[in-house]
Amino acid sequence: MGWVNDAVKELVAGRTVQVRPFGGSMRGRIESGQLVTLAPASPPDICVGDVVLVQWKNNYLLHLVLQIQDEQLLIGNNLGKVNGWVRAEAVRGKVTAVED
Image (cartoon, rainbow, N blue to C red):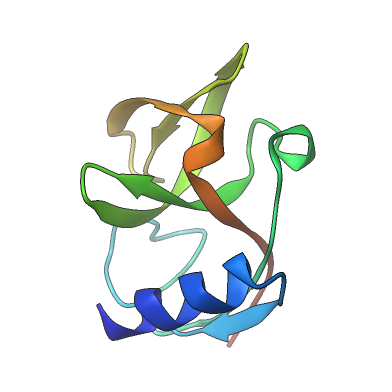
């Protein structure tokens, strides 16, 4: 996932980045190949319903925040799959815009 490595590098440096992710897990909210703007985000900036770029099991996912409990986020896709709980500090960025 070349776009992920570039995006994480920019987000960690505090910069907003635009990417075109491919895949179907967020279908209906983000279509494959759409232009997505990601901004750096810290735990207080994250709300239920946000789409975040999160480190998950040695990989990265662009997924929904389904619940927040203390410093933990329940993440899942837009098709009903729940991945599980992750620490809020695993979030690398938050989607701020989706364009064609």
